[in-house]
Length: 428
Ligand code: PMP
Image (cartoon, rainbow, N blue to C red):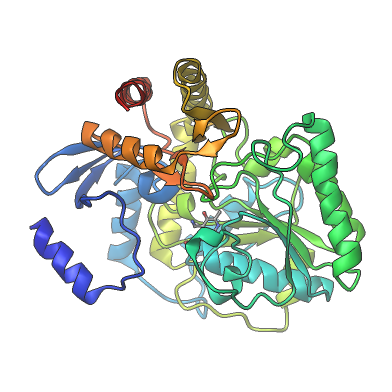
C-alpha cells in the first residue's frame, strides 16, 4: 500500500528527496499524457516527470526500441563499437545548426554541464565561467556552483571560477520596466562589466538555459543572448546553451530553445526529454572544441549505452513523425492565450510567460507590488491534483506554476487545464 511504501521510503531513502503534495501520490502506471495511482485513479500529467517525458509515458515506439535493444545487447561501454550509439550521434548532429556535430553521451544533465565546463576550460585555456543568477544546471559538485537558487538552502558550494551575472528577468529584474531592446542591452552590459572587472580578462564560457526552468520559466528579452554571445566570444570564451528543458521542439517555433533568440551556441547540453525517461544526456559541440579532449581519455561507463541510445533514436523519430513541435506551437499558444484571458479575471495571476509547451504562471498577492503568493500557489497546486491534474512548481519564491507536459497532449487536455485553473482561482 501507499502507506507501506511511504514508511519504507522514509526509513531507507535519503531525507533529501523532494516530495510533491501534502499527501504524496504514488504513481504506478503511465500511458502517453496520463499516469495512474495504485487505486486506479487517473491523472493528466502536465509535468512529465519534470519535463522528461517528452513524447508520452511508455510511448509504444520508444518502449519497443528499448525492449528490442534489451533483447539484443544491453551494455558494452565505448571500448567496443556499437552501431546504435554511432547512428544516434549522427542523427542528433542532423538536428543541429551550424558546425555543431560532435557528441559525447553521458547519463544526466548535471554530467553534461560538468563536461561542457571542462571542454570550455580546456579549449580556451581560461578558467572563469559565467552563469545567470537563478539558474539551475545540476547538483553534481561541479554544477552545484552554477546552480544559483538560494531557496535550495545549501551553504556556499565550491565554485572556483564561477561568477553569476544579472538574470535577464523581465518581471522582477532591475531592468524589467525598460523596453525589451534597452533591457537586453543593460542586462548584457553586466556580462561585459563582470568579464572586464572580475576575471583575469579572459573567460572560458557563458552558460544559460534559454528559458530558465526550475527558476520559474523566465524568458530573456529578445536580443539578449546575441549581445552576450558577442561579448563572451570577443573575450575568448565559448557559449554553452543548456537545452535540458527547452530542446527537442518544446518551444514550438524552433527545435532548439536558443534558436528563439537567433543564436548558435558553441556547446549544447541535453538531458531529460532526449530519452523520454531513459537515463540519457549529451553534449554536442564543434569538431574544434571536441578536439580539446583529443589525446586525453574521457570515460563514462554507461554514457550512451545501447538501450538509452535506441530510446533516444526513437524519440527523435517520434517528434518528427507525430509533428510534436507543431503541436507544441499550437497548444502552447492556446494555453498561453487562455491563461492571459484568465489573468483579466483573476488578480492573483501576476504574469503568464513562456514559449510553446514551456509555460509559467506567476502568482502574486498584489499585482502592483508583485508580492509573491507561495501559499496560494501551494493551495491551487493541491486543488488541481484533487481534480486529477499534475503540474510543476518553481521559481525563487515557490510561486510559479510550471506547465511543461509531454508534447503529445490534446486540445481537450489544454481545455481541461484552463477550466481547472479558472475553477481553482475562483474558489480560492
Ligand atoms: N539543466 C537544467 C536546465 C535542468 O532543468 C536540470 C534538471 N532539473 C539539469 C540541468 C540537471 O539535470 P539532471 O537532474 O539530469 O542532472
